[in-house]
Length: 237
Image (cartoon, rainbow, N blue to C red; front, side, top):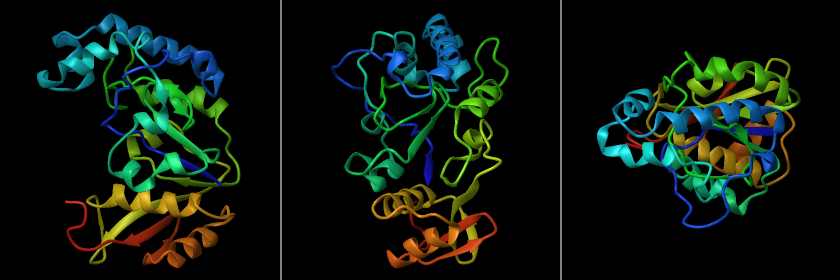
C-alpha cells in the first residue's frame, strides 16, 4: 500500500538545521525540475510580482521572501514542516513512513523523512514561463513514481492532476453528511483514515481498507473508486 498525502498550506518553518540537500531527497530524477523551480522562486523575489504569481496577499510578503532564499533556509523532516488539520489528525511522526508520499508543487513528491524548508507554492501558482505546475510535473512524476499495488490517494484535485496512477488500484476518500459529499471535515477525515491504515497490518485491497476503517469505528462504504466516510453535520467548520 502507498498513501498519497496532500501538502498543507500552513507549514512550520524550522528554526535551525542544515539547508535542503537535493541529492538526499528521494526520487533524484525529479531534481532537474526541483532546481528549475527553486531558481524561479529565487528570481521572483518578494515584490508585487511575486505576490501575484504565488496568488497570495500582501500580508504574506514574508512567505514570498522566504521563497527567495530556500537554498539557505533551515530544513527539517517533511512530517515536521507540514502542519494543518490533516497532519494533526494523522500524527505522522509517530507512524511508519515507508508507505507515505507527500505531494508538493515544489518537490513533486517527498518522503515524510526528507528534509525540506518551509515554502509557499501551491499547484495553482502561475510562475514566469511555467503555464501550469501540474503540467510541468506530469512527465517527471510519471517516470519516477511507482504505479502498482494499492494506492490510497488523499490528494486534492490540483495535486492529483500532476500524477494519476493508471496501473495501480486506487482508493480515494470522500466525506459525506446527510447523503451529500461535503468539503468541510474532509481533511480531518482523511487524516483519520490515513492514521488507521498506517497503524496496523498493511491493507492489500479496497475491501481491506473498508474493513480496517469500519473496525476503527468509522461509518464508511465503498463507492466505485472511493471510500465514502460519514461525518457529523457541521464537522470541520
